[in-house]
Length: 117
Image 1 (cartoon, helix red, strand yellow):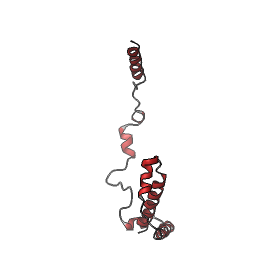
Image 2: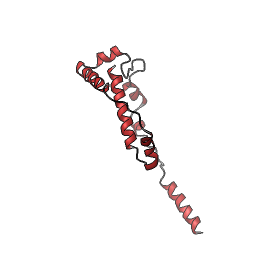
Image 3: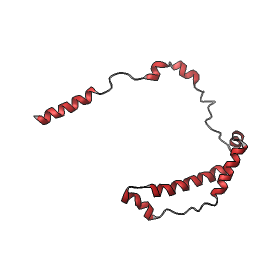
Image 4: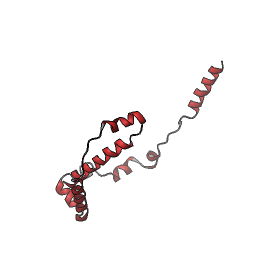
Protein backbone atom coordinates (compact mmCIF):
# COMPACT_ATOMS: atom_id res chain seq x y z
CA UNK A 1 0.00 0.00 0.00
CA UNK A 2 2.85 2.38 0.84
CA UNK A 3 4.42 1.75 -2.55
CA UNK A 4 1.17 2.60 -4.31
CA UNK A 5 0.83 5.87 -2.40
CA UNK A 6 4.45 6.71 -3.16
CA UNK A 7 3.96 6.09 -6.90
CA UNK A 8 0.79 8.19 -6.92
CA UNK A 9 2.60 11.06 -5.18
CA UNK A 10 5.41 10.94 -7.73
CA UNK A 11 3.00 10.91 -10.65
CA UNK A 12 0.87 13.74 -9.25
CA UNK A 13 3.93 15.90 -8.63
CA UNK A 14 5.07 15.33 -12.21
CA UNK A 15 1.77 16.60 -13.58
CA UNK A 16 1.50 19.54 -11.21
CA UNK A 17 4.80 21.10 -12.35
CA UNK A 18 4.24 20.75 -16.08
CA UNK A 19 3.87 23.82 -18.27
CA UNK A 20 0.22 24.72 -18.65
CA UNK A 21 0.43 28.15 -20.28
CA UNK A 22 1.68 29.39 -23.63
CA UNK A 23 5.16 30.92 -23.40
CA UNK A 24 5.37 32.12 -26.98
CA UNK A 25 7.16 35.32 -25.98
CA UNK A 26 8.33 36.45 -29.42
CA UNK A 27 5.09 35.46 -31.12
CA UNK A 28 3.14 37.61 -28.71
CA UNK A 29 5.47 40.61 -29.06
CA UNK A 30 6.01 40.73 -32.85
CA UNK A 31 3.64 40.13 -35.72
CA UNK A 32 4.55 38.06 -38.77
CA UNK A 33 4.64 41.21 -40.90
CA UNK A 34 7.14 42.87 -38.54
CA UNK A 35 9.44 39.86 -38.73
CA UNK A 36 9.18 39.70 -42.53
CA UNK A 37 10.02 43.40 -42.81
CA UNK A 38 13.41 43.03 -41.04
CA UNK A 39 14.50 39.78 -42.74
CA UNK A 40 16.63 39.97 -45.85
CA UNK A 41 15.10 38.23 -48.88
CA UNK A 42 16.66 34.86 -49.75
CA UNK A 43 17.57 36.10 -53.24
CA UNK A 44 19.91 38.77 -51.85
CA UNK A 45 21.12 36.91 -48.74
CA UNK A 46 24.85 36.15 -48.95
CA UNK A 47 26.22 34.95 -45.59
CA UNK A 48 29.84 34.87 -46.75
CA UNK A 49 31.90 35.47 -49.89
CA UNK A 50 31.90 32.47 -52.21
CA UNK A 51 35.10 32.93 -54.24
CA UNK A 52 38.72 33.65 -53.42
CA UNK A 53 38.48 37.03 -55.13
CA UNK A 54 35.42 37.95 -53.04
CA UNK A 55 37.27 37.04 -49.85
CA UNK A 56 40.28 39.16 -50.81
CA UNK A 57 37.95 42.05 -51.54
CA UNK A 58 36.27 41.79 -48.11
CA UNK A 59 39.38 41.13 -45.97
CA UNK A 60 41.78 43.97 -45.25
CA UNK A 61 45.38 43.72 -46.45
CA UNK A 62 46.65 43.63 -42.87
CA UNK A 63 44.38 40.72 -41.92
CA UNK A 64 45.27 38.90 -45.12
CA UNK A 65 48.97 39.15 -44.30
CA UNK A 66 48.32 37.80 -40.78
CA UNK A 67 46.51 34.80 -42.27
CA UNK A 68 49.32 34.13 -44.72
CA UNK A 69 51.95 34.41 -41.98
CA UNK A 70 50.01 31.95 -39.82
CA UNK A 71 49.80 29.55 -42.77
CA UNK A 72 53.52 29.81 -43.42
CA UNK A 73 54.16 29.05 -39.76
CA UNK A 74 51.92 25.98 -40.05
CA UNK A 75 54.15 24.67 -42.85
CA UNK A 76 56.81 24.01 -40.21
CA UNK A 77 54.44 22.00 -37.97
CA UNK A 78 55.32 18.33 -37.59
CA UNK A 79 52.09 16.32 -38.06
CA UNK A 80 52.80 13.27 -35.92
CA UNK A 81 50.27 10.44 -35.71
CA UNK A 82 48.34 9.94 -32.48
CA UNK A 83 49.65 6.78 -30.83
CA UNK A 84 47.43 3.90 -29.80
CA UNK A 85 48.40 4.47 -26.17
CA UNK A 86 47.01 7.99 -26.25
CA UNK A 87 43.93 6.86 -28.16
CA UNK A 88 43.17 4.17 -25.57
CA UNK A 89 43.78 6.55 -22.67
CA UNK A 90 40.21 7.83 -22.81
CA UNK A 91 38.75 4.32 -22.61
CA UNK A 92 40.90 3.40 -19.65
CA UNK A 93 40.83 6.58 -17.60
CA UNK A 94 37.99 8.67 -19.04
CA UNK A 95 40.42 11.54 -19.58
CA UNK A 96 40.60 12.61 -23.20
CA UNK A 97 42.68 15.73 -22.70
CA UNK A 98 45.88 14.26 -24.13
CA UNK A 99 44.14 13.00 -27.27
CA UNK A 100 42.05 16.13 -27.83
CA UNK A 101 45.03 18.38 -27.25
CA UNK A 102 46.96 16.67 -30.05
CA UNK A 103 44.04 16.32 -32.47
CA UNK A 104 42.81 19.88 -31.96
CA UNK A 105 46.31 21.26 -32.50
CA UNK A 106 46.56 19.31 -35.76
CA UNK A 107 43.13 20.59 -36.80
CA UNK A 108 44.11 24.19 -36.03
CA UNK A 109 47.31 23.89 -38.06
CA UNK A 110 45.40 22.43 -41.01
CA UNK A 111 42.90 25.27 -40.80
CA UNK A 112 45.74 27.80 -40.93
CA UNK A 113 47.08 26.11 -44.05
CA UNK A 114 43.70 26.04 -45.78
CA UNK A 115 42.84 29.64 -44.96
CA UNK A 116 46.24 30.89 -46.12
CA UNK A 117 45.87 29.21 -49.51
